[in-house]
Image (tube, rainbow, N blue to C red; front, side, top):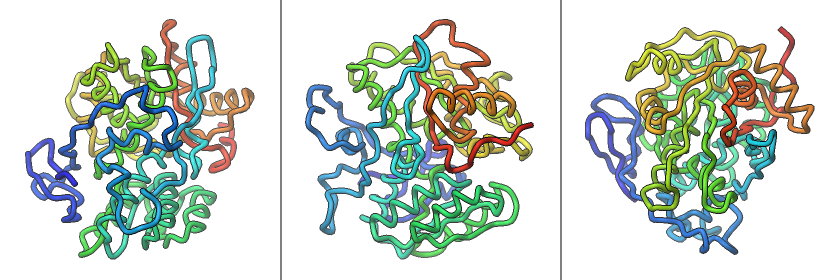
Length: 373
């Protein structure tokens, strides 16, 4: 295994130490890992999960130990692309095993935890990430506790519990939940399966772009439209784009168009102000609960990633999100409100005729249809 490294302080720590953040600045880790190129021709006949891109992953499946499968997997990945317009295509990540894109990162964290053999695994979530961690820990035979806000959608809470994880319902907002989990994460022998702080999660979400690249025959669209709360899908996408470009597998970067809920949009505000970091937002209710993050720890990295490819930020109101969810359902695609945010942004702002892919990140059965305003 490679080492964690702090992008701000330069501090390094071995992965086996279970240190979940930089001890100096308390920021999230990056990973000292260089992906090997993935040959398009070599992918024929490979396993139908994200492990098919193992040259680009920091945990090669062939290194798995302890018997059983070569690596933890529920067959995640390989989600289809479905046209929405002549130029816009949706990637149906709500068809993942736990019905959200978070499976891409959760499988990496569960495989890492399986190798490290901690006393227990903990996670915090507004719902989908916790569900994914619970499911993959169950698959890996790991003891798991998930902290969620007390107001989390009942269906998401039920799904987490169904996978056998212990639930800690935390009064207050998403940040209160994160604080409770981080306190527990400092105990000895605990692996903090943080989709925000642990960079292995980002190396899982980058497979979203590797799949698009493979399915489009070795190219990418002009624009990748991505939701931003903590930014894990966008940062994973940026990793993949930079790797593919460095290996000469794409000629140009696609623009990353980031989408936030208008009610909680600290990174969008910083972007349009020309700032390098955010001013934390106030917590506020929004239909897009999965991206309502007042102070994302990786905000500086998100801003840098969007600017690197000439991208931008858009915000969408709850009315737009509600209308987009119903519009997608009328097209046969039932997603949760957060998962409709990117389609709402395209409907509101357009893409000036450029080719684009949008993720439909979470299934509508997790939340139901958004209530009318």
